[in-house]
Length: 399
Image 1 (spheres, rainbow, N blue to C red):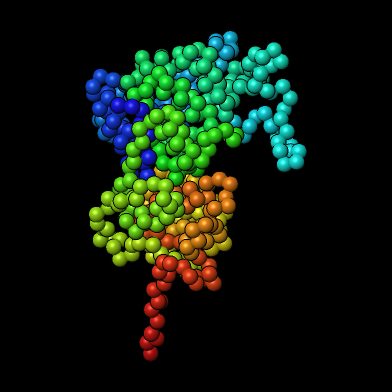
Image 2 (cartoon, rainbow, N blue to C red):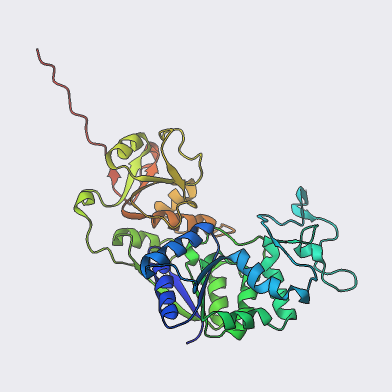
């Protein structure tokens, strides 16, 4: 069986798939490695494995992406590039070679002597490592891993093939640029051992900075299928959201993915009186919160502070990723509101997919009811019913 790419839509049960497949390999006598980006997901994978398997196992290994690069691809064969041991990685959210806050004609200014190669053609350690040469910049670890693989004639992949029967890369939508070169070096040696799982509609985080392709969702999918010859599969069944919410989520990335089919067969009686998609007037947010206790999702931590209760627990769209709630109340930014109104081109001029993807994530957090907050004066032309707060009972004065 060739290496696989699984497009796992929101609520499709990708974690369950990874764990179930891993258990089959382990029960057959194999060893499994799961590589993922966020620490929260690492904890979730370990927890779900124990839940399904009944106990932990030394044959089920979970690693963060940067730890994987350093421990399994770079350090065992780093002598092919650098003589001294690299102790750990140094997290870099932004390019460490840019002078902070310095731009010329809109372009960042690079720090001197950080080029990839020195004048004699040798590798410049300060392109990949900190000044002490004991820490690797996280943003350049994939690039370094690819370089080590090339210079060692794919020794890291050969070693991994001897250790693991199966390697899963979770949340592959977050991979960019050099991550794909690293996976390419593995797939040459392991043509039937790798399974990549993710949903490019949920690309919110990024493993690194830079503009090396592939960057866009379709580029990433094409790289797996066309360049790496991965076999593409789809997981279109949503086990979280009712069909009406699934249908709305499908409109965010029209035509690029299989139609989402809800596996929610019945709306529970306790929420059946209010399910589907709604509009909530900004003036009635307090009433809606009191009536249904929805989870509030918003673009940033300051969105909606003028009318939300000060002590209300809210999530940003990004921080809600991976979570699910019976009822969700979304405070949409202007661009999202344009889309909700029916403007299919609302995201067309965006340079990145961030805004579109965050809307998809927000929509697919809701199981049974999804509501958008809209200013009272902007209600006209919205395609969903406007929720009205129940009329207050009139007090009758008794003489």
